[in-house]
Image (cartoon, rainbow, N blue to C red):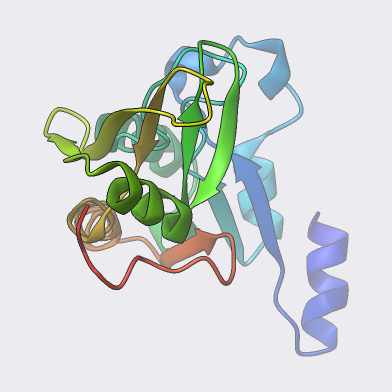
Length: 184
């Protein structure tokens, strides 16, 4: 990473490395063995920590990026790398589960459309600063559970940049915007 960083710097470029989020509790998980945050932080200009996908479609429904989970991940990252080299990733999507282990990624526009279509009132979950709602699909597929974000939850999670003294934030995925209605 240091060699690549030097080569890019010689051309006036910066090196940003995107990494999955993990905390001290995840250190011994074999999926994280390839990520030496100290070494990567030494060679890169920025580490973009993907502080999203706390819960994935193959699991039971849950928050995409709960603030409590993000803070655990950031605590770990800043213990190994200077905070001014870290970018915190935010999701611009939600997940819609038809049943456990069957989630589908949905843009914010999609989740906003579901709220309108089914006349549901999303709930803000203060313990993880995320939004959830359930609806009975009219296509016969049963009851769905959706977890997503709203303007309030994104603002709160983005405010962690200042709280931790981070370099900034990033958003996944480009082009997926916050619903204009602000309904959820």
